[in-house]
Image 1 (cartoon, rainbow over the protein chains, first blue to last red):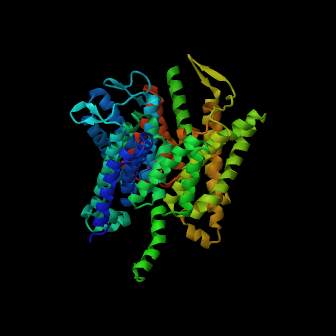
Image 2 (cartoon, rainbow over the protein chains, first blue to last red):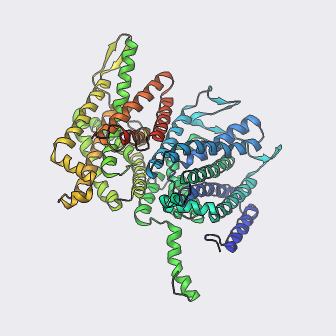
Image 3 (cartoon, one colour):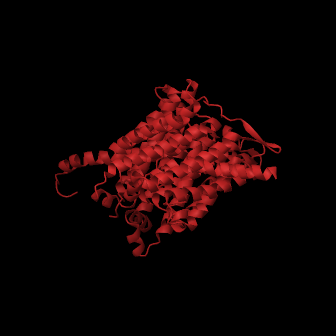
Length: 337
Length: 288
């Protein structure tokens, strides 16, 4: 069996995910469904960073940039054309192109991990300032104003390709997001189980050794970075569909920090954990925003520090470590893992 | 002619303020290889440490030059002890923990002080240059930045502790073998970096005002300057802030401050493609 490729588990995950995608809209209220959609969207975004940071070891602190570019590309595109097929493609391709250019400069310069993290963070900070400042009427793309700090309200949802009149409703957006989540998850599992995926992980473990074996670490990292940007872009497109709105706060440092926290909560080097961590933290911040118990920044900051200092591996690996002895005892093999 | 003078003054001011916000970060990074993501919030604390006492009736200069650096410096020592020291040698974890600290400080400041913009009037008034007026405080910022950089040079080159700190930076193992308490050197260095950040935040507070999220407006520039500068603390900061400050200020004249910032970032990324170790990774290597 190939490492990281548990066929039965993946089939179960796929079927379970699809069952939720089509079943839940019949079971829960629309209000709950809309909230769940936001968790699914952030889970997709979390998967993109789980790949880039968790498996390739690329410290991308600005994953929100690709999310934001994807969202803005879709919003501006669909407001101009009135039909969503091309904007959806743009929402995925434009972040990938941007990631390819930025990644070329960083990976081919072989800047160190920490420099890379700082540069990507600075890109998101400056993207925030840039978009935030474009509030005048002269900042427009075609018929659609960029809107600056006000963002772009009233973005039309995705429609059935070629038929602009048949747009998706709240239930459909949930179903679509859930399908995308399942596809991205299975796709990443397949990628990581492939030859390329294993080379990527080997580069994370020891870049010099991988290069001595003849693999081009720069190119591999660049490819992973671009794939991650595409996934983040798709998440951005779905995010706009969720709220029919996008604003510059998607580029903000708070949001970048949240993405990192999702991964930290779920566990670095996991996919399912990262997605679950994203949903958990998103639920927490939504709840804090509604209940006003405490400033979300304070809570997130404390969670962040505590995670780093006390639970550095994240929740999924910690749970697995706790559960593994139990499982072993039940199976009766107390030997080597 | 007058316009040229104003341009030169503004470029000098941009370079000086860049060096000012970066020097505390550069000292901590250069000495300890720690990137302090809460740097912006140290600047914010410095700003409040001057604005709040001034509103309580304290003399502006006392608040700016004494209270702010001392308060933030002591705070830095506490942070070093609680968060940085347990994570020594784990660069990524340190970054993440200080990022958490940054969020926490923003949250606490907005909860306690609120989002309104607090300020203190810049002293000195302004001077007339032909058709243009220029605040005297601008010249003060340029002057005090030169004094601070000179002070850092003197401290590192001509004091006992500075030399020990430089030695510890080059090889902590040998420094420890020679009887230096490396932990104490790190704690003091971090405290000094924090104090300089607090001072920088205090000096800029009369111009920019203070809000809980003010740090975010500084950190991108500060990070880029430190990374662009490379390994040498002082030479790197001066070289990088001269380059980036000039580029961003000239672009600001042509278009808007935001475009100036974008230009700064683009120049920095292209520069790092050519000089991955920063400017002092290739040039001026013997600088401090």
